[in-house]
Length: 242
Image 1: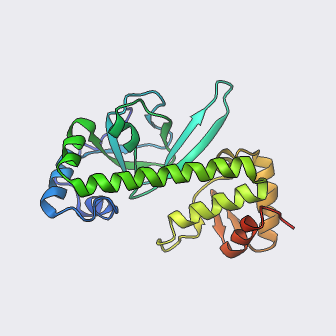
Image 2 (image 1 turned 120 degrees about the vertical axis):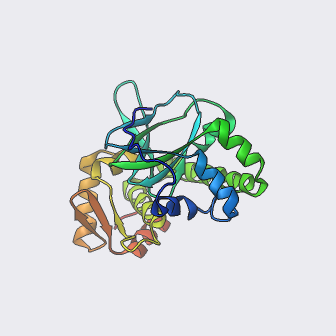
């Protein structure tokens, strides 16, 4: 895994640990167990564009994002890309391969400058076995990821462009609804096009139409959702954008 390590020594700063501590799957660990988990964590800083893992790599670590955004994607032999997810601060990824020992199912690339914690599978699995409640939470996490994937497949197969785009914006907004700027989505139009499977030109045309209605506002490298309820109504109507 290419990376630039900071050389930071433990103990980690409280701000970095608090990001991990606030994750719903670690927040209920008792202090001693959480301290043990932190002893396993290796801290790295990554520049934008750094490949963290590639599809087919051994699934030998769990990764938590401390700052920045990581893009989970797959590519075809002819160079086309599809973004499966954007993992932000406080989220984890790589748990599927860590738990089943199979190769990575997608690429993970630093979408911005990032800080991450990496926990080796050889240390993480015994830790999970010693924490039955944590094991149950990971089952919940995997179920949530499966539902997310099912929703994406349904949208690609059944929805038209307005419906797919509205669904994607709603999902990204929901992920960050507790943040002060929760309706500002740090995503480019090219990235959105790779998420919904349409051309950037089509995405731009639809977003501009919605901007004229004041449903969204377009900013450099970001989309601000101004009227999420109208987007929800559009999805519920089957994506018909009258």
